[in-house]
Image (tube, rainbow, N blue to C red; front, side, top):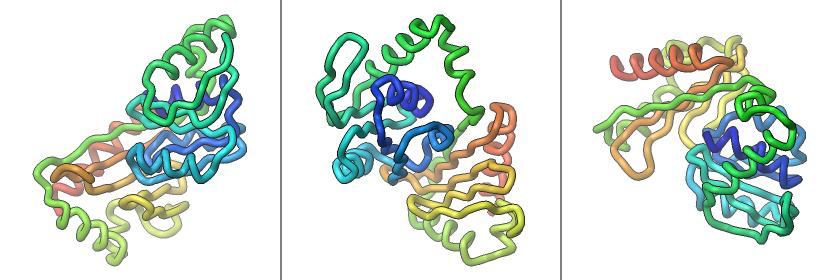
Length: 210
């Protein structure tokens, strides 16, 4: 996905700063970039953050869009800034890195921190219901603990775009009303695909019975 290829491409281009939506894979936070900025979900927010950060900054999204904010030195010469989503650069950049290192693409990705994301949505959910449900989660400790665990199981809570909870075991559950459809979205992150799929299924099932 784009939030895995993005950090690889940023590394190839020697970027100092990264701007990416809050729902992107957190493996980037464990790499050696000087500055990682989280934004609301949507490329306009990513671009606005890049313009504010400046310098050798890139942006990317999980959908594969990569945004270059500076004159970068590529393997075969200079790359001019491109402040719109580009799907080709992260593909070519990651393939080049794998070939340059003499390993397969899967081996290259396998060298990154083991963090797996998954997402899904519930359709025909009015935005008002979604927003009210998130407010209930924040206000009702019993309801909150049913979804995320009690206080000792919580590492951090982020309300930048919806409700994103990082638990003590480093799993993440992120609820968010869709910005362009009557849908309630759920993003999760874990150390393996199996764990992520189980967490996603259980989170959506709990919402359905609320």
